Amino acid sequence: MSATVTSMRTVTVGLLGCGTVGQNVLQLLKRRQNIFDDLGVRIEVTGVLVRDAGRERNVPEGTPLTADPAFLQESSVVIEALGGVEQPLALLLPYLRSGRPVITANKALLAERWDDLREHALAGRLYYEASVMAGTPVIGPMSTVLRASTFTRLQAVLNGTCNHILTQMEGGQSYAQALAEAQALGYAEDPPTLDVGGFDTAHKLTVLARFCADGNFPYGDVQVSGIEGVTLEDVAQARAAGERIKLVAELCCGGEGWRATVSPQRLPTTHPLCSEGASRNALVYEGEECGTLIFAGGGAGGMVTASAMVGDLLDWLIGFPGHVPLH
Image 1 (spheres, rainbow, N blue to C red):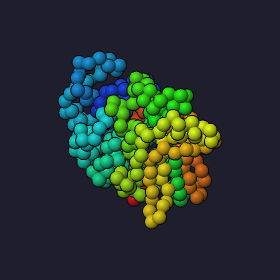
Image 2 (image 1 turned 135 degrees about the horizontal axis):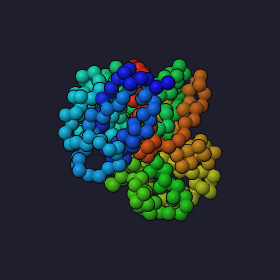
Image 3 (image 1 turned 90 degrees about the vertical axis):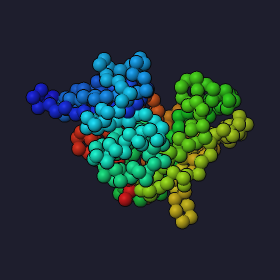
Image 4 (image 1 turned 60 degrees about the horizontal axis):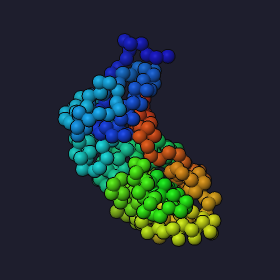
């Protein structure tokens, strides 16, 4: 039963960025108002930070678009959908130091500036389910129930652009043709190096490693190789052997410590990353006690990502802490 009007409390939300993800966050906040009603909460958006407040966007009527971040002072919680590293860090650090929570999907920020963010993550002020595999929950399980199991290995396909390009190459397109199509469809950035060079995947692998291997796992320890060198001949040879080429993120114990790699690999077509993850992101998690677990689903897209970010907001409203890495 929804809370009565008199018992409703107002929660002020600030949003940084209003691209595809930010617009979908705003739409989803409006769409799921019934859930907030049941919690006795009225969501008030104090401001949405944009470069050009006059640009037309698909947002609810009355959305306060602004180029001035002053609204952060009035916000109980901030949702960050800017992307990049330095700009969001400059805005979020003072906010986090004030003891207020942040919800983000920014894997680059988390991976590269962890020294600045770790104390806030340990304090439960950082929520970032959407930073890896978007709306497919993997960080939540890793940060909770899977901690009782001894982690041994994970393999994952974490970048939809590379997945799309390699799949098109299996159909006969050259790498250049498949990349151009991915850019035309809006899958790949321009320039696309972050995706095809493997760096986006490395950011995500770094975030995951802090929940199952080392809470301080450094981004610089990931060995990265992208898909730029994959040829049609490579793809054909793999198919002839009953295999597919995937850009695989892998974390396992090697030598004296953990070994993290991102590289194109030939996998049997029966491998979960080829079957369950045929056209989706997928992750295979192995633990001594829990056995082998498979996560697969949408790993990108505005509404898919927004669903995880609004889910994090609901967790905070209910009283759950953010995603705490290994101590």
